[in-house]
Picture (tube, rainbow, N blue to C red):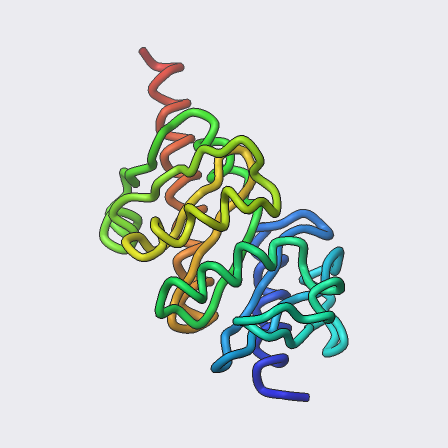
Length: 189
């Protein structure tokens, strides 16, 4: 098994363990030169096997794409337009909830504010596997560590899967803190 496949499998299990996805949602990829390794469509990230990871060409059409995640269009555009080499796409409940209420998210907790500073919310007509997301999200991820696609999920790009996972977990923890703080304030006042 390749070291890239092992890394994707490792972080697939962690994404599930931390409750950042539903059973068959989310996807993970790693750039390796002119290729990317990406999870298959409709796979369970927490139970990935080597055959669930597809190698596809980054800069040209590839027949293997028909087996890859339906978000491949988004992953490819991020890689083509940033210097990042790892992407994790999750569906964390609290971050998605905040995306329905806010235009951007500025964490109120110290770690979240220090690590993420600000998390933009991308509003689009078609949020799942769309050219619209692909055309816009790389502009955000060139400036910010992570982005929430309104009502859909989080895309985090970084220099490694470990770093992308870290940013994703910080976002969801900060989202929980923000949500619970606002809920408590609304009950008290």
